[in-house]
Length: 260
Image 1 (cartoon, rainbow, N blue to C red):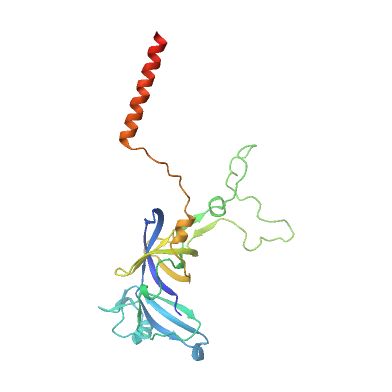
Image 2: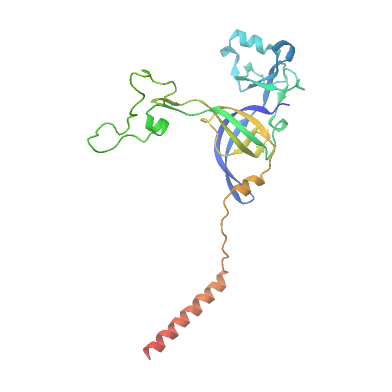
């Protein structure tokens, strides 16, 4: 059974679930067109290839144009447009759909589903070890003038005589594949092909995302996890004025008695 769709990040916002404020990220999800189906006999596994987005025909290579010829006219190809992104999703058994079918958001997800979102994180350029790996840095005193954000020692001496692979050092930060799990589908807009998930997702707006359903849940989980706020009863305006007037009269009486 297919449990994955492609989408793109739109923006962050907030919504309310039973009076609880929940930060959400809106994702434009689908419609995705089936561009290819792999079977067990020919390819060794069941899989479906999904296409998302649009690109001009003139910007598409000839081999890719030939690969997408199988898609019929009922897909989202119109005005000489082809899918921009192609991603393969593995399946356990033979799929129920065929090449050219369009899969919408309502075919896969519903409110309360638990999903995992995969995307490319924001690139932050060349970064030092303090920013990239949270190094503590060197001392700020005892004659140290230029060692405050230095990495320090990166290895031993003659033995082993090299730096171990994977050593945390300065380099390019971000721009990698990141998966955020256990997000809950808070809202679904079928008309605009968009869904809102609780919390942030990787990348910048218009970034390609892979949304995978991992379990079924409910919106009650968001309300249960929210911190409880103590609610105090507010007195009515008329009663508070009467209480204030009685307090002032009592203070005047006490002042008069003291003067006498």
